Length: 291
Image (cartoon, rainbow, N blue to C red; front, side, top):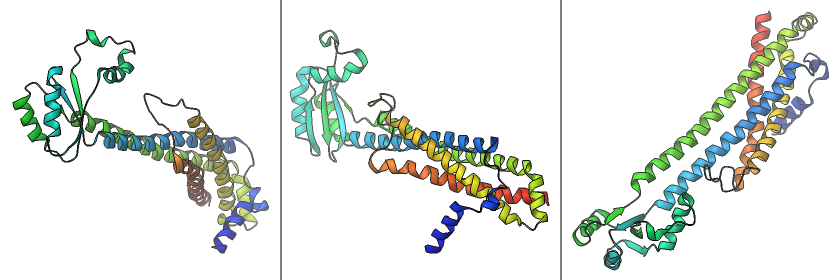
């Protein structure tokens, strides 16, 4: 562990003589920092989308699990239906939904001043079941309450959960693409910087500098630039997440919760590791081509 910490400290400190090989500024420096910041900013949103869709799918599946709705043809059948449900094994609760609650459910779609008396709203009973024989219940309802419809929510619960799962997968795909683009941009920046310093590298080789020493200087500079840019982009992305309006109707709960806020901290670290690997591979490859 001490040896690893010593290597990290030496890497961060660098070699002043070797660092002179890499220009401290220029378009490659700006390109690396800005691209890492932009990709980290997008990665924060992709990560938030993936985590939020995972929570949303779990919430939908959990809230609708073990619930059903009984739609009656008229209000006169409510007492008979409630008695039948209470006598059915596995039915934990059966509750008649009052008109005021139906109005509250319809208010987001039709407004709070919906005239319920002028609309042919059905009589609804909310059912909570725990291992009930729903097929047998349907058969009893068909015999005793013709026209009653038992809805277990399976017809639309499955597609909603599947859609949330696909959005979560899309978030992880976006993270993978962002990582790939970041590596590609850094690789191009390293190659451009090496090509621009071709003559300097040639002189260093004449005085005995090894390719590993030259590559190490590029690796350190570009890794630290990627770390700086990714850290800045992560801070901006988390700030933007915090500024999102609460209770969004399209993507409710987009963001991080609890310990999930620690996950964006991994983005600069992963960006630095990707930059380290990409820079080292590109530098050694280009230096080999220069021989």
